[in-house]
Length: 320
Image (cartoon, rainbow, N blue to C red):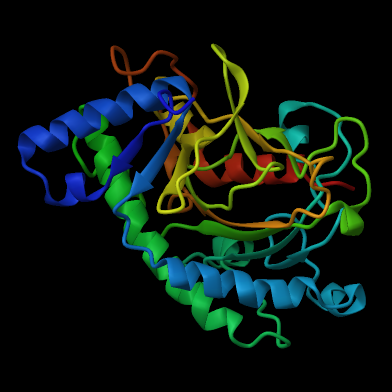
């Protein structure tokens, strides 16, 4: 799996000469055709910041359920997604028990010019008053993510042999989603039901996902046709980046939307607790996503409105 999911140093892209950048782009293109995942170092996101976010978020997740309920949100909203709120495998059409996680979810809240779009995608974030330090930490992190996403999208445009702003020019006022996913041990969630995961098998919905995760026996697995399910390679210095459905569609399925899952608490370490910071990159609302034609693209999908597509996907994983 490590050979299928390479580790790249982003400084090679931002600081390298033309030949170095071309070789990196070719490596990225090849990797995204197979598993749809990369490990990225040289990203400049401070490990201490990530640790502080986890510490503050854990304070929230350990609060009584009735306190957390005051911040309850729907899938795709802002606030707390409690136990049983999501079943990500629903997006694949698979009936599974709900995912074994809780999430704090935030998103873009800078006003948009269209009041209808603004109400749907730019509602104010809901920050828990019990953990006042969480907001400035998350806002700093998300500022770093926005800059990192721009570098990644520039690299991805070049990896397709297109202009570097091919994707990034559609990010003038993008939405994004940000989940802090808490995966507590079995003493909190109970014994998993058959077919139940911390997050069930699925692909992400947007452009690129940037994931800061922790290693664990009940951690991330990636699916490829050649190898089936395998543990994702882990590097504490790296962020994990994967292609989402919109980007795969944009590339005419040249790149694979990375299928993945998060295993339940392991039987031999039932108290294992993990936390992931998940940034879901998206586009400016109203972006028309059209498949890149052959020979780059391989499938010509009908054009779709990016956010009509995203809303349908988000609704599909909601547990009623």
